[in-house]
Structure formats: structure tokens, C-alpha cells
Length: 230
Image 1 (cartoon, rainbow, N blue to C red):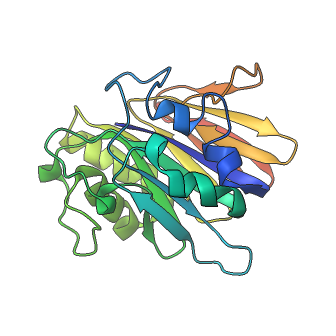
Image 2 (image 1 turned 90 degrees about the vertical axis):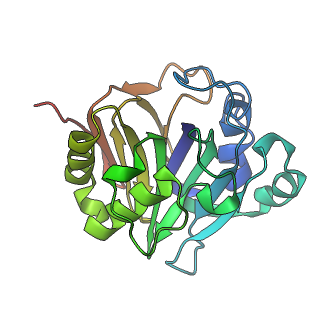
């Protein structure tokens, strides 16, 4: 399991999205408020963002707990982007604890984070998977089938592993896609953009919960939430 967030809008510093909110990812790494499975997210973290002059995403990942990474705390205020995907990790039992297993995973312009668990036996062993962990294999499978087909891909995986938790966030720098499959998401519309997160980063009453088995798409035109059961 993990906690993750995505931002789309005007450029903001990575620190303002990940470290500064009172109940943001830094806080959720040791004291999540809504996490259903797992107690802390101390098995690594990752941030992906899009530089203003380059369509390809950049990533900074670590196997260390986010709360203890002084280098990230020092540099992240200087990193700014209009599209960011970040996550803190609580590893599935038996999965490796290393940088390559930390989200976000990438393929071309896309970044993906997975909040959940899935039996690796039901996933193809894609040759370009970044790790042998379940989340990395799932990401490679989604990318192989096309990120735009993520809902159909997750439906097929859930058919093969009915006990899987498959909530994901994706971005290509121009939009954010999310699917709730075992865990909810929440989103907040700000004057300069939209944040989608595993759980609200503060107690602002404007946060909107996205129930389980729904998808969310954020574009510059607005937010669309779709019930996947209808």
C-alpha cells in the first residue's frame, strides 16, 4: 500500500505539494489518517515532475523514509512544475525495498503510481518492468496495453485476482487519470490547479471524495468523475 498525489495546474514547487501541507505526503509517511491497510509508509518515496522546457518527466526516488531525507527537503523548494506525481511506499509483504520499486514508474511521457497489492502471478512479466515488485509489474502491464486503456486493464487484472487492490494515479504532464479500486481518492480544486490524493492534505472543506470503483480525469478544462459500476 502507499499514499500518493498528483497535481495539474500552474507551476508549484515540489516542496509545496509534498512537504509543506500539514497532512501531506511527508506527514502520511509516518501518520496517514485514512489508510486502511498498513500503519506507516516508510519503504521509500518518489516524485515525478515535468520541467517547463522538456516534455519528458524527471524522477527522484529513494528507498529511505521520506521524513528522514534531508537532501530532498533541501532541494525540493527549488524544483517547480505544473504536473507532479508523488508517492510514499508501504511495501507489499515479500516485495523488495529498493529505489527501483518506488513509484512513480515511467514509460515515455507517462508516470504511474499504484496504491494496493496484486498477485504477481496474474501479471505478464514485461521485459521493461523497473522492478520485480507487484506495483512495477502492474505499471509495465498498464503501459504495455496503453495508459489510456487503464480502466479496462485493471478490470482484467481484477478478474484474474479478485482480492487485488488496484487504485492508481497517472499523468502525462497534460492530464491526470485516477482509478479507485480498493481505496478512495480525494480532490481539491484550487484557483491555480487541481490536486488528487489518497487523502486530503488538510481539513479544507472543499475536498471532494471519489468513492471506490470510480475514475477521475483532470484536464485544464476541469474534473470528470465516472462511476465504473454503471
